[in-house]
Length: 445
View: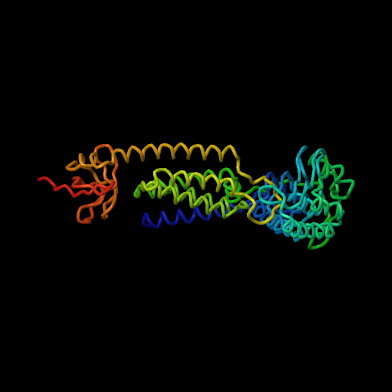
């Protein structure tokens, strides 16, 4: 077997192994198994992927049920609808337990608890305040608020009626942003039990019967094997890049690296880093409620930075680019899209945004100083002293490019528009405005 074929087989084998491991969850397939899932943090598309996959696994394996230990401030409305549908369509009992002490099932988490077959909370936890808000956490305008609230309230009523929970109390979490302590939730019929810990909850649930899509199921917790359904590598990756601050950092790195590549073509590292960081940023944005108008501002900033490097704006384009980038970052998760249930949990850190703007401002300052020096150096008397000087082509002249003369980089064009490859020696013949005119130095024998 050739080395190429062997390498190909090894590569394909690795891909199959990764595909297998990405779906392997490490639980058995008997009726005495209870799958334990942990949901901590915002409800994002990757959360829905994880829960849907594990519900399907539990159903196919014949598990006793799924215990979801929940602690969330909220999440995205469309994602919440996906999870609620998976809960209502499940063939295995879904048990949601808001824990540990001090945890909450905020906004989107309220829907998950209500849609579960069995709902439980630890002491000193809370649930509620599920009113739709804008992406920055502020209230919606009157018309949009009415439509969004009524639509969301209808979903909550449907869930409460299906699961036999207190319709009015749950509806109040949407219409009046009502929140309840664990004791209040139990008294009003929002949840079924309060348990100090997982062991106490399992003891309470032994012998309980619930009605799933496929019929009645009796939960037996003695004996019982607990298996943690872990996220696969894809879900972990999406969780990581789905952090608003990480996404913004990747977007910033990508923008700077691509600007460098545009200014100085041929620097492959800059282009590779820029494309990779930008691609990862867009993957992360797929997990977030992004305001695409803000992305237009970021792209406009990138264009302005590139224009500035051509020396046309004497710093004005760079300043405008910095302002656009700052506004784009500020509005990146702002109030320009669909309503949500997450409040401002997806907001960008103002410390991070301020630091990026400060760094860009410093770079702009250095750029303006450099441009002024270049203009001073670019007076006709200074340019005339360069005639006859030798230089090295840094980016191919076809016919325009850059050359290194002495220790400084210059924009240049080749005499008679001839192509001169990178690395060739040239001689300055003349100048045109701020651009040198060069000719290839004859080779010596």
